[in-house]
Image 1 (tube, rainbow, N blue to C red):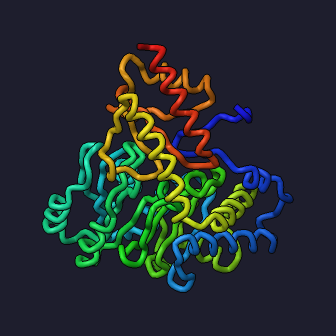
Image 2: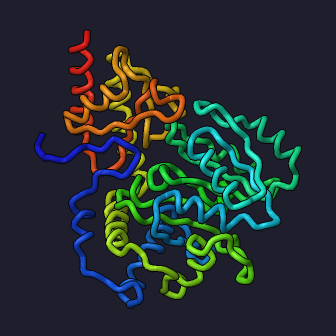
Image 3: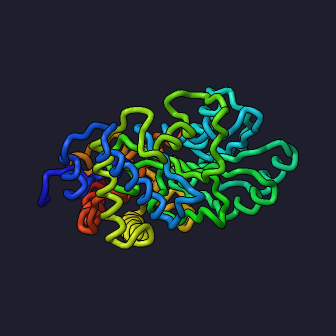
Length: 365
């Protein structure tokens, strides 16, 4: 290889560009100074610009924490005590939304599916008709358990005609898949820096309709993850708690780099090229995808393990060649592996990946 880095094909954190990595070396800042305030405000604007949202009706709220912090802040801050939540589960991250609701004592019900299943719209409509008190619906956009991209456009009219607020976990789709906030009636969406945006782990965010925030006299469920407090202070240029300043530097640079490259549409197209290259290359040696074409995101695809390989062995042989793949979870742990094409990865990197896998398999035959 021309460089000595591991090629990360796990679904975040991702390989950084030199430009983003160098941004970590900018001057140390106090989070109570005007320079930090300007940095924070710039990122909030940049995040809204990714999908062309206006700052009058929308806000990007920044948190120091992983994508799960943003998920938890969104659910715990935006479902009121007299509200009722429906969580759609078809993978680990949908189930995590339910765990969050349970821990915070939120009134919720679930619509559960097998992990490899798409959302059952008929069952959803039936459940909503039986539970007319549902105020909020939470769903994962890209369920990285399997790589499935859940169809939010299909959910939108169902929620809109019932005046149900749609809360979206877009942790691993924001920046590379379509998110039509207005037409799909998205009330809020949680995401993170270190996936499709190509930033560093440690900063996450919620993009929300400003009128979805609780009134100022509402007692929050948490101190650290209360979006109302963050939004109020960030609007004034402040922050309630210390933010991870270096990761903010990296995020603003990553967002700038993405804009210059053509925004989320260009990123979607590039990921799609890499994912297709991998899918076609693996298919040519009999490695089958878990989901049919058109069901997966461009961000991550899941594949059945090749015959005669355990996941550990497959992983370790690839790691020896500088590639990090990702295991299946739960009952998929022994049958699949996952390949993500996020981050500063080249076409040559992925061509070599396919060649390495072919070589490993031919040695076995």
